[in-house]
Length: 154
Image (cartoon, rainbow, N blue to C red; front, side, top):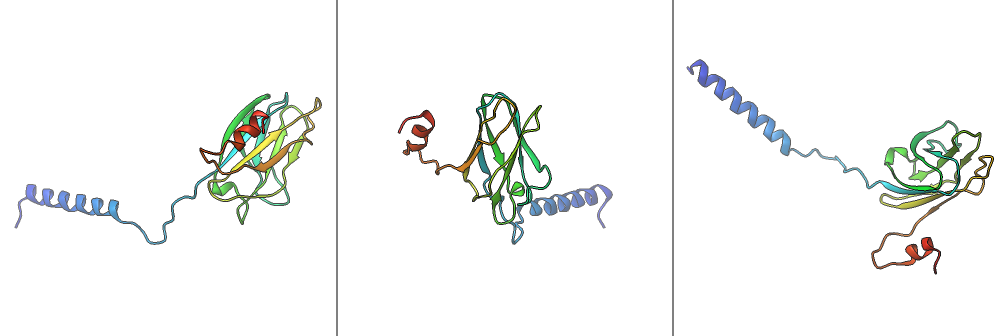
């Protein structure tokens, strides 16, 4: 029979072995989280805006707030898979803070790792009707097209 000290040591060794083996176990069917969508928001108006991911195609409800973007500024927003509608569809709602102005985007099909842009334009009364939502080309270090488009060239 083992004395009390050796028994504790043996129990500790077994416990450590069990915990360590659990760290190396990889369950079947466990999928890595897909790459998020990168949303580039350019607020080209005076009003600060809240940007929401809309959960249903009807646009009902306010959705999940993704970001607040100050007037005349830009923001990079990460959109996770859980913010998308079924089938990989992204819709956003934009609300100009301090006004009744809101804008609901068209549905945009996206894939993991895609980049999309939201250009927010507001009038003096907070109307957002000129706002645009569109896909951006894949980022290729040798491709200067996106940089030229943003800088006004090409």
